[in-house]
Amino acid sequence: DNFGIQEALQRLHVNKENLGTSTGVEWMETNEEYQTSYSPVNGLAIAKVQSTSEEAYEAVVEKAQEAFKFWRKKPAPFRGEIVRQIGNALRERKEDLGKLVSYEMGKSYQEGLGEVQEMIDICDFAIGLSRQLYGLTMHSERPGHRMYEQWHALGIVGVISAFNFPVAVWSWNTMLAWVCGDVCIWKPSEKAALSALACQHIAAKVFKDNGLPEGISSLVIGNYKVGEYLSHDKRIPLVSATGSTRMGKLVGEAVGSRLGRSLLELGGNNAIIITPNADLDIAIRGALFGAVGTAGQRCTSTRRLIVHDTVYEEVKSRLASAYKNLTIGNPLDENFHVGPLIDKDAVNSYLAAIDKVKAEGGKEVVAGGLMEGEGYESGCYVKPCIFEAENHFQIVQHETFAPILYLMKYSDLDEAIDMHNGVPQGLSSAIMTTNMREAELFLSVAGSDCGIANVNIGTSGAEIGGAFGGEKETGGGRESGSDAWKAYMRRQTNTINYTTELPLAQGIKFHI
Ligand code: NAD
Image (cartoon, rainbow, N blue to C red):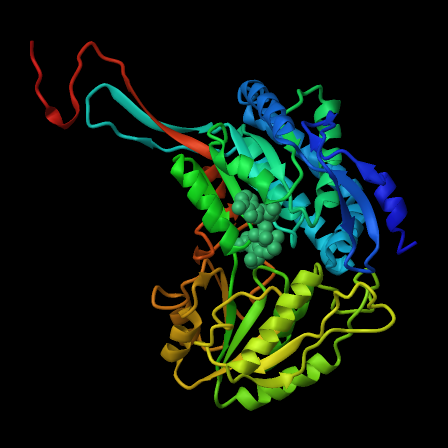
């Protein structure tokens, strides 16, 4: 037994063999194959889950359509109350779910707990929101007319999620979508299906205890093919997809070709600029967690450090010695800083990226490589590494989902900002400085071109209260806080005439 994981699985209703298609309390059997989930922690099989067939998908959509007709008419604060209960159920299962996330995905137990906390936080946010889905009222140009706008539920929201935040991304979408009156069909990553299964059980119990119908929360399991059912389906007005830019382009195209809406949260290539005015203690700590946290598998992981030449050598040597103190091992054991990559394919991409940066002329500062021996049997543990590189290198322009950090030098801040923005992605960014002019320039329209821009904080670790997402090849979507809820609703403008006249807008005359 590994850190109580077997007991946690039991409490989360994850068995050795599980059906994977659910409309809530009901689980459907299909003729599809069972997929085994392996843990990158120790390479062992955790459990099996059955994929969703096209037929079963059809049944799920039909149930969801029916459920929407019911759910949309419930008052939003009532829907908020259901989300409140889901938040409480997550509180009760926080340790178990955090453990499963850590065991199935490989992030540290602390980060697994953090991910569940994020789910709880978004529930709290959504509850408040359920009384605040505000529209504007405006003055009509016509006498005796009233004009206002209101927000209505959209329908079925399809949620396609990535392996690295296997449960939080679902909650960012569904908790908001539910208070907005939508129903949701979730296709989680095939690399983290069990964590999804556990969430579905937790939510389903709350819907059942409240006597609510099947179809408000549905789950479909499988690879990209099941994702394609959602992206091509006209009955799904909104597809929210989180994952690689490659996937986002395909989903965006499929949804766009039927003029549906997509909300895309794709890859990043995040950088920190360290200026001569930086507090270097904070800068080093922020860069370190950003680059090696979650073994570099966060969409907001720090990939590039752009350092002023007067502090470059100091940053380089301090980072190198910090890397020497990193411990790599079982993420459930809190003595280790860095866990495994998700699978061997990810290890191969990491090794290929190291070859590539060397071939392009990169200079090794801290060596990478695969960890071998006791404790590393899964073959997924790698060494976080650092290379001196140039921004135009092909490999630097590309997001490698692993702990590889590229160091670059600058002498002028405008040049640093150009380098910073000179990549195809635009998710998260940071500047380390105590100089107000440098900080404000970075945050100005002439500064960072990313969806997230921080000062004296690393690139990763966003809070749920702000809108989360990025520009350019990151896809442009925004989720979570602020007014991100608007993506899950349709806006209707209403004009009411309470007179006996019928004046036309723009003063147009039309007499018979
Ligand atoms: P991935 O693109 O391989 O898979 C993501 C999801 O998309 C999976 O559920 C997969 O089955 C599905 N999918 C793949 N191809 C599809 C298709 N053609 N049609 C429909 N669905 C399809 O990504 P991953 O390896 O799981 O996750 C890592 C990536 O996700 C990184 O690029 C990371 O930056 C990104 N990410 C972004 C954010 C964000 O908020 N911007 C958050 C987390 C992860």
